[in-house]
Image (cartoon, rainbow, N blue to C red; front, side, top):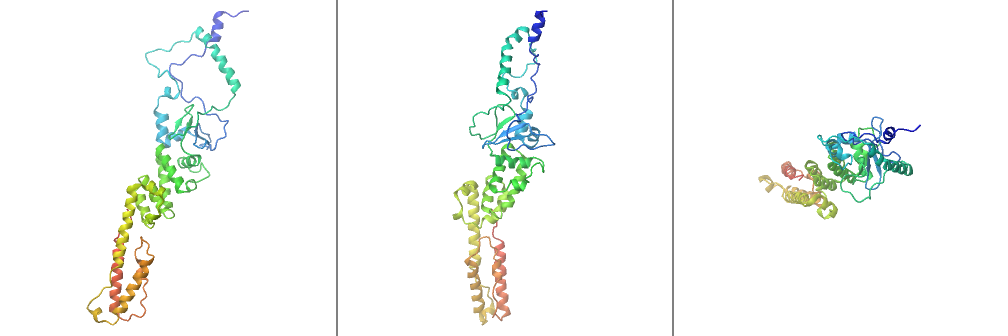
Length: 355
């Protein structure tokens, strides 16, 4: 009719504590959350929650983050399990045996067990509250190893995830995700922060698309990230924009050294073009006595003046070929004019085109 003391103590015993800590990821993030983006990978939802600077929540896959980013690979792959499990006792010591549970210990813990059940029934299954949203400058774990605060906005993080997930996971392709140079630059910054080679290469290649439409901004962005070859290519088009038209923001982004290189390129090309257009038409013994010589010289001067009016600084002087030769009847003089134009074109090709 009455239970023995031994049976009563057995009912009160808590489950035995394992000798080594349990795996760090024994629980999943709460799914009762309105996620901004929760992609499927191989038919499964994610297990890591990222909250952006603008308060949007993403549910992504830990395995993919480990594969595509060095940051999460180091965090989840090399940090000891006992640190990720938020325990303060430290790692288990191999020479200290685990203490066996006792009946007295179970009885003392009974009040805590009851209180935890009551608290769980009151609070329900609501997701854990995140700590106050102080501005973060790097990915920061919050209440659990599953939940992170990241410094990127939802737009930038979505574009970044589009680059590291397999193609077809998102409806938006890579080109659509990186729709502007500003977004592309911010994604590059995120890729460098998370150390994702896949995202960095994709975003860097996308920058070539903006060279024609935004050459100066592309040059500034490439110079900021030390993309030397991309900066040199963009400088071929950026040289057209006078330094007086550069915005303070663009100048600050490219830095003083990159700005100086581009200004030196502009100065060198302008001086070279002025020197080429200041030369006179070639002459020889025949031209000294030819009646067509004044006509040839006036034709050359008029064409040079026309070209110099609105000459772009990146010009190769092909405009000199559009010369009006009507009325010139001396073949030798035409030969001298052609030689002058040909040498001018050769000299223009020798001018620096990039920095």
